[in-house]
Image 1 (spheres, helix red, strand yellow):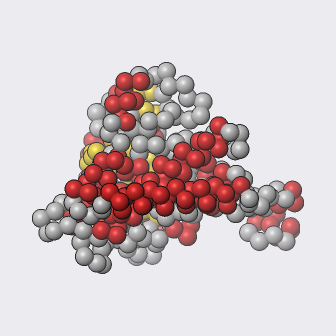
Image 2 (cartoon, one colour):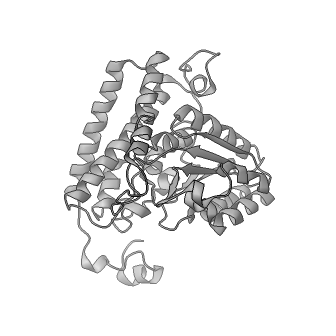
Image 3 (cartoon, helix red, strand yellow):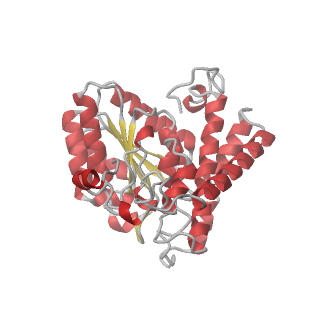
Length: 348
């Protein structure tokens, strides 16, 4: 999405920044991407259950507002690093679901030619440096990308998504310290969905809010409602502007919840049905729909039309992937090393 509206703002001058700084088209596009994340993941889960795809996956159902809200004011020149629960980040940054499905199905048309699967999708064309199966693995990568931006005197930024479990990794502290010392243009976005696998943050972390840890690295830290796209966008946009102005990094904690298990193997014995149902009542998608209607930005018929278009896009993407090209045995080593590619006469 464009960084700022070039058309008429969706709401009047007295509206909160989220609505004052974006056009109606941009806000409806944000809702579309939230739908797209939800339906893509639901279709992906169905594919696994039916045995059409293999391995494991980590769903972000319930966290769509954080992914889309954080990416709304980024361009393709800005970078993101993602996590093992990264489908939402990919779509939030502009990925096409047909190529994501193709990646799931191990097809040549996939973003990583079917080699990456669910946890390792990357899309350099949109600035997505990739999801990462290593907890906290994206923290040093985003910091390095921000260093590269600063060295070339650019105005771009790097957004680093990470989960609450990653904030207890050494890479978290090393990355934030380095970024603060060198005033790097990076925004660390913690998706605190309350659990690192099956361990709650209340049991694993000494501080109540992850954002409190920003104090140790002399950078702003803010905690927001991760299920409110407006709250997320306003906090991340302020951090982005600060980074673009050369003022250094920020830490934004988005408190949200995954209504699905950690992965396919999660039997959900560590949390109650009542807790899950309570958070389902805070679903960010219907909440955003109501806000758009209340502000006169989208009518119910427009919202229904967006939903229908997303359904078709997801089904078309699924069909594209299932009819995709299977890799051939002679391409097994492609992309492993440069010398292999040269020896095989295969384009890297």
